[in-house]
Image 1 (cartoon, rainbow, N blue to C red):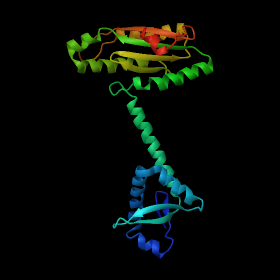
Image 2: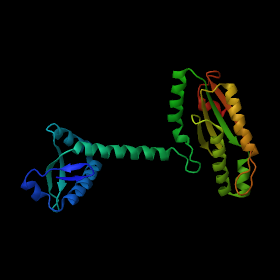
Image 3: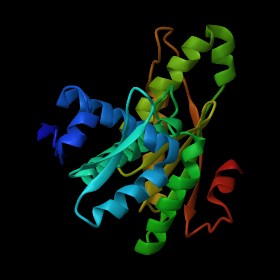
Image 4: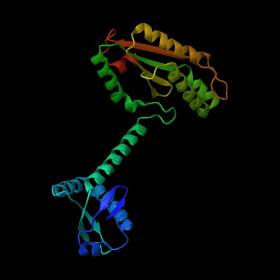
Length: 241
């Protein structure tokens, strides 16, 4: 038997030993590579094959020789091995989704994440019967910054302002870059008076700040709606009004 990171292969007879020419570690590595390709080509087919053979407590994997002929061998713990690959694949997909939903400039969630996050927050709001404040923050005269200092300084201003916004809010609050110089802010479990204090704190911190190497002063305008008090038809629409 050979053990490679928890993956175990048992030679059933001399025929299988003949089929699997070469060193055992090399064979396992080649088997791993081929399983990856098999999953890419037909993950459903591979899963079905493994499931059938699992009924007899041994799982099956095909290995291609140099002559392109496919030989079938039995491998112990192949289901666990496949599960580890699927878990890694899921983690990769989640990572890709996370990167797609993140604004590369500020690191905040972007508009692609709005439906998912707003739905989650909205559901929690209805379940807990607590208020939800949704606010839109807009940097004033941002076009003037880009025109006067250039887009690199403008980008740096957005990054620094996003850091200020997050620093002024709680961990459970959500800050998203809605687009351009606009930021969407979700304040769960926050009634109108609490929202006013939090958003005014954000506004003042931006107004008091000096940003980028160009020593830029900035101001922001903020509008907000509170559910259930305002009961807007669409929270996102409410912020745009």
